[in-house]
Amino acid sequence: MIRFACEKDLEENLAIYNDAILHTTTVYSYHEKNLQERKE
Image (cartoon, rainbow, N blue to C red; front, side, top):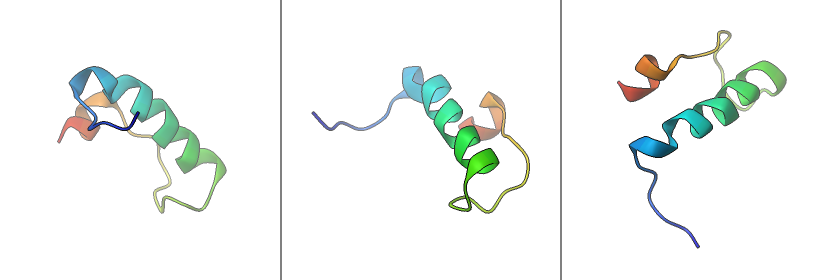
């Protein structure tokens, strides 16, 4: 099932995003993000 992400998904999405920052070239950012930054 595919659905839109909601605020309760932010923490898990952030973990996936930060893993991509640290271990791939998919995201061109050099520093992990925190929850507040992702909410913005």
